Length: 106
Image (cartoon, rainbow, N blue to C red; front, side):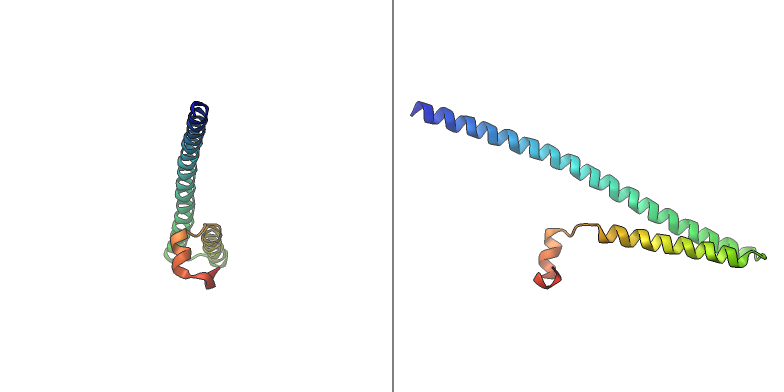
């Protein structure tokens, strides 16, 4: 009986250590996801802001380069949209959102 209790205690200790390790890894992963989301949101905001400023500058100062500036503004809008779409496409669905959408969404 004594040997069995020691063995159970050892297994419990090992399981506890694995849970602590997993918790630490989850915390690190959560921090990394938060940082990535912040960077992505900042990039989208930056591109949208640049596009808006460029559009305002074009409207305020019509020049002979209007077509080139319009093209540049359009390119910024396209890149902003593409970045937002890529982030959305690569953002995993949370289990709660997946359950709410049902099996048809999978």
